[in-house]
Image 1: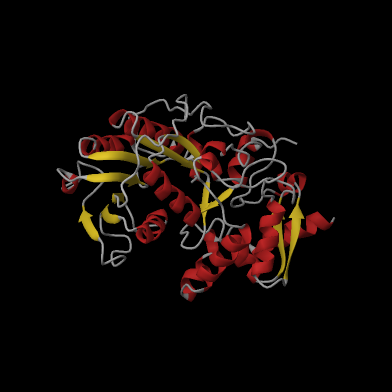
Image 2: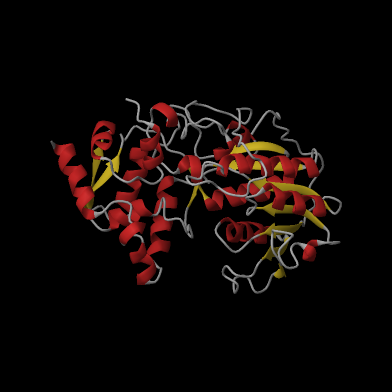
Length: 378
């Protein structure tokens, strides 16, 4: 069964919010990495940034953070912090980075090519390695199973436009243009990291967090699709630890940093993820699976993480990560990620937790969820 494009956009925000090209992977250790790296993180206080800090510190690396000082400004007071803006036309822009030397830079907050071009060109003479965090949304299509880093990427009519578009349709093409800017400034010295859904403790999007949090409420809850549908998520800690490894080994090229290997033997099933949610929440909840035909007829507003294993999104959770695995990417269990995510969520202030289930922030209203469950029984 194929869903129309409007339904696809409703049921999955992956194509727009996740978190290419023709260049073959150059996963090489061109030289032994220094025992102690000087690492610059552009950002560093959001979601992936803190995980990078925590992954790098046990290795003795020296860390510097560059950001606006607005997100979690009190985080990591012991680290060197440089303040500025990714947009070189705002205030002092990136002047604080001038004439400084680092071994590697992690760019996890570059969304517009003009910004990435400015920072990469400024840093290129004094930095050995540029690691840019892109997205599998850079690819032009989501219907191809086993898609690797050489797949076609998306384009946009006006590459100078600095807008994601009304339905985030330019998010992926902008990421691809950012990749090109980083690679142009660091020829042969850039690593492009293309994650899918990044999940785990500290996730501000609540996309994966919704599922264990909903299971913790108990009772029946609606789950879209089939337990056999594939799912690819990557724990933010696994991604960060691998990126530090990439820096230490100087692995250059492009990598899909997606979840467990998408083969019939080892792929993660949607049912496995939901079972982990129920188990971590204490086992009192009961998932009710809502097939595609019921979703199509009852038109829920949308679901997080999951996408139909059909039509335009058949390949979304079946992206090849073989290059990244060969370069050292490893995964903790879905149970560990789920339980840790739920424990983190339950440690948040009550008003923050309630936000997940209030008003527009809630994925399904109680009434709509009851309607779907009733329709599934019928």
